[in-house]
Length: 441
Image 1 (tube, rainbow, N blue to C red):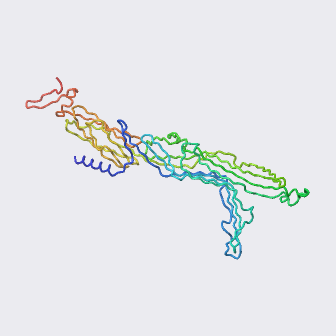
Image 2 (image 1 turned 135 degrees about the vertical axis):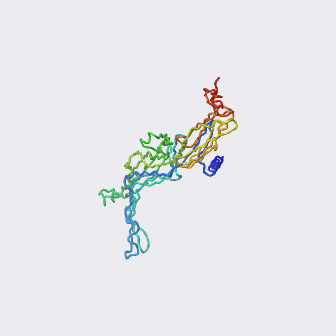
Image 3 (image 1 turned 135 degrees about the horizontal axis):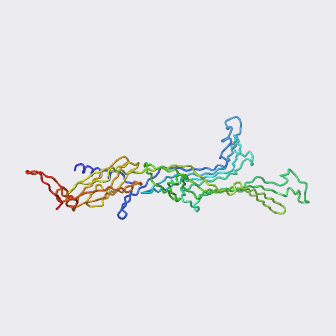
């Protein structure tokens, strides 16, 4: 009895001390043990590089104004054509039975950016006054598109109504403005009386406008063909059969997005005849990237989950013959051979078999003792089942069979009372041997 009380005390202590993460819920006559766990944070990233984003130039002013030269120069060029996105998040597994894996983004960690074009500065600085001036207005310009967005990852369901879009433009970048006479370097030899040279009346303005549009849509977590044999995805979560061998599950996944981008330059020549006050703008659209759609496939990541695994060495027991009102007991171990804490509900289906404790919480590599008391109320055969509902996804329901017999008299009458075949017993008396028929006529 000391052993029984010690086991009870240990079970109660473990239940009180160990943290409980799973949820044990009664559903009709059955029980369910729901569990969940998060993976470590993962990060997906993809860059679509047309021209590597780069810079070239002096960086800062050269030479410094501390020397004998009374001026400094700064010349820098930034150029490139690339787009990209990245996001962070964690995977979340929920079970019992089949494991459903969801993906949740870390707030404000989704980001997308784009850069296309060229940006140049060419300046000189007077070291005495500190004034900065352009080397030439034609060497200082910004013909680049740039944008950056922060969003909430993940878009897992392929929803085209919730895209991440970026857009930027260059408006009216003036390349050249002047008269036809300025362009040809003088008079064109044609003049109008009282008005003057015709080439001086014709005015040209050359401008550039540009637009860039990028949209990422239909994004989702994806798995390769080999993984799809054991993993089902409905674009919202992955349904995975838990591992039959080992209790650590690793799932390689990647992220993909449909991406549409369009880049175009609009070159506009505006002809103005001043004397007539007429303007003739002539726009010419030059598609740099004419409405291209691509599938971005981000880098592979691996999410990992740990599961408990139940092990019971002996799953059947026959109790000694026990008279009504008396009791017999049996103790067996429930072991967790998995890599995650196991939580369980222990239920007896027959009041003649009483089980203690009713709940278990077992750390990986540990075991807990379960005690079953056989306390019959009536005579005869008694059969029972102990059912253990746990958060083991492979074996969420485990059964242990129990057998017992209850008789009112000494145990030798058991088979006779039950109407089994009679048996002979040979006894010894003072006069010699006698044969008694037990259970026969």
